Length: 281
Image (cartoon, rainbow, N blue to C red):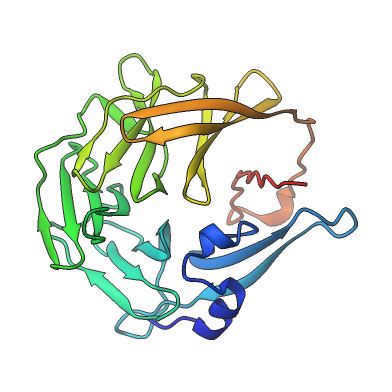
């Protein structure tokens, strides 16, 4: 793996850049990982700019096809591959540019879920794998290069709604009960190597998005399917077995029309995604 380390270092200045540089975040575009800078404080020149690219190459020299990326305390866990046959995991420190390829005990599935965290007692980084077909768990410890099966399980009655986010070395997911369709928050504690209890969300909505503030607080965004309003809640306290929330922002979103060019042809594919970037005045 090769990265634009000098430029990345100048931009981020500190290995724990997520804590220091709240105006910059990671984004996958065209299956490549970029560092994106956002300026929300200039009323004249509001901007979103690409500030750096993580250039990752495999053993053949080809750039990696990155489908997912996870960040924890300065390290990146990238999921590469287009199918189950070529899905791979690689851990990268953007400042050193050295890859750590993670070989599986069993072949990775393209729908398997992954998380990156660390043991607070010894500082060892670990990867959690949740098998797609039965929610079975495996843990990989980077210091020993070994996989193990924890005693805990995730349960087949739950399904993760999105990728997990890291906070204080642990990973949190919004997950839906398959029978009741009710949403809860779940935490995997990498120190104890187990899931905590179901934690309440401040609402039960159709579109829920989870993110972190400097890896110290969780934020959750709700957009009801029958309203043009969004709500953003922030945690007052967050632990593997306890959470409390407070409302941060409620905004009425203006409706708008999107026009598509039918002359683009059959090969033209429309993808509908929205990114909400929240700043402080």
